[in-house]
Image (cartoon, rainbow, N blue to C red; front, side, top):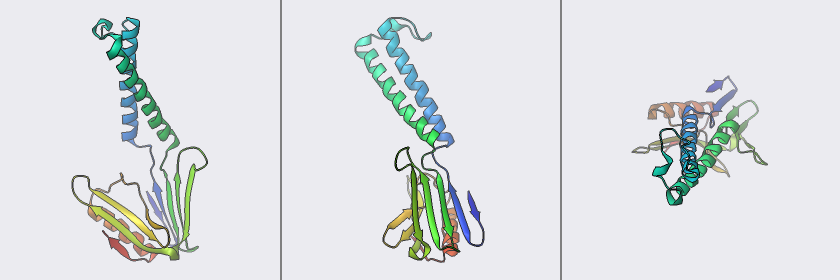
Length: 185
């Protein structure tokens, strides 16, 4: 989502709270819970899952391995749910022509560096660069080339625009707003 006025441009960046992340976290939780239940059923010799008789799987080695994979899956699922809860990667890009300041803000993981803030002057922006890679895993990522800091990506790499034209349009609008040249690679 983008908000613009005459002197200010704000790009809101979505973080981890996407439908695909919710689906993966939920499916991983259910699958790993199933593995843990099968491993526990084989250990106890009781039928914890109605469609699965515990006599079919012996605890050592199959039940033990299934329990291990289930516990590992629960940890990964917990990690995904935490990134969704904390909305890691969300933030905004603020370009203020009046003040001559650019501020890039992102939320990170809890701790000392939970807030990731990059601030620099607009006069340090050398160009608005767009990297376009076509092929099986196509990538279209806009960057800002900053004097002394290199290239800074403006959006997440998995948020691909649907067409090359859309990213070029966004890059052209931003370059016009910032009054910097465009580079396409």
